[in-house]
Length: 153
Image 1 (spheres, one colour):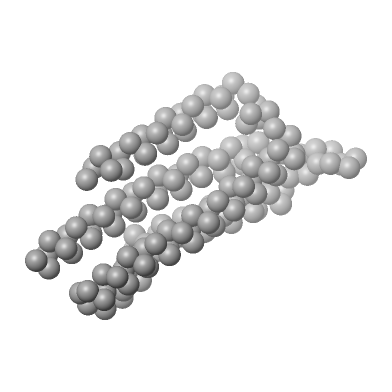
Image 2 (spheres, helix red, strand yellow):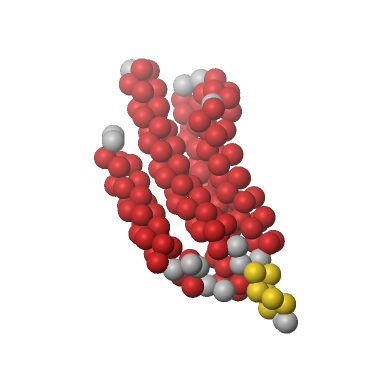
């Protein structure tokens, strides 16, 4: 079961280390200006909201199928689960952070360009954290469903 999430999490960690090395060499992440930072942050914000919706939907589908076979208490336990609440909170927090940083970027028509490079970099790292959290949630759900299946036999 550990191998199911070890590979993706290891890849994200290696990617994060690579980004740290690149950011140490350049003052701005990949040398983007105001428009590039806006595009990157809007993409990260949209992907976090999509990831939150897909994760929540797939988990609910699995729980509805499980509750129809076993008991409806599974749904109540899911809604009270701290892990689920924390994961969805992390996704929503990354989304909100990207929107706030997106609002602070200035540049364009005669305005002095301002790109909070560190904040954009942190948003990128938070997106990597979101991917890791997704894999950990998937691992925990697989382990819990295996336990429920073996406990019911």
